[in-house]
Image (spheres, rainbow, N blue to C red):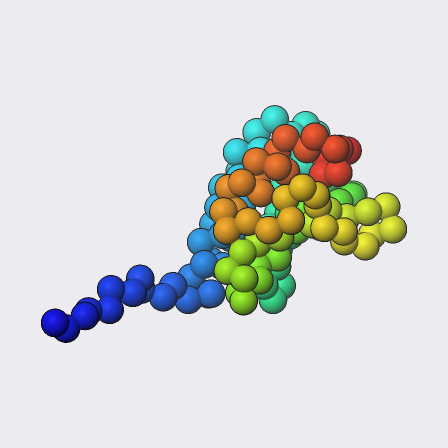
Length: 123
């Protein structure tokens, strides 16, 4: 009897990353509605990380932003096929967020950012 290999199709890290970027952008759009004073949530990518940044725009045209605050960072670890969640300390260094150390589900990490039970992300 011949056995067939029914392996799941391999999804590239790039597709996983792009899907996560889209989820984070959607999260930011939904989250911006209650943000006061015209703050904007911006998604920045670098390598395998996605950073959510709050930007208080300038009051005058062509002036630089009044304030920039990094909210959270998601880092993809292709070897684990999972994401880790990080928060920025007062020293501006990133620290891993506990208890969500690794997750294959970006939505789970976005829920942790929204809930912010420890005050790490939104203060």
